[in-house]
Image 1: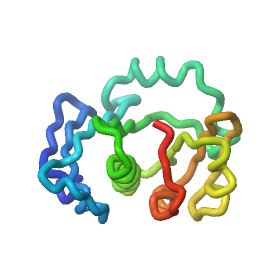
Image 2: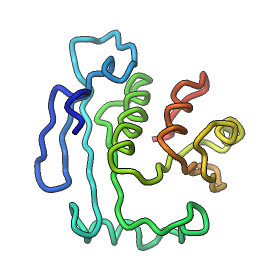
Image 3: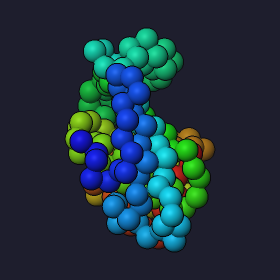
Image 4: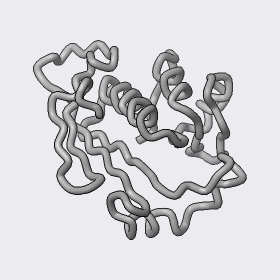
Length: 155
């Protein structure tokens, strides 16, 4: 599945994966070549992972169908266990890799001042407004955003 980018890949329980990603395997130059980047990849929804958690986390969210064209039934969370520029790039590119496997739409939290830049990138479906906006798009959007000089993740 993702073994080509990871030197550790353990399914701790159904839908909950512990990975150590080698930054260079995603094309990111990493000056700390002694270590891999730790991540959790958690899937949730009917028949996968923790269905109750999915329902609880999505209960208060707005209806996404008018925004992205459908109502999500599952989600995949990519959780970085580190926080530097290289980690942000690897997080975004790992997200694109996962989406290439499972499909769907990626949501990225961005600062409101980043929205004009994101609007010009390929793969964008929609942006919801706010001080912290959410951009929805394809893996193409994520790859284009990582390649942009103003790339930054909010979380």
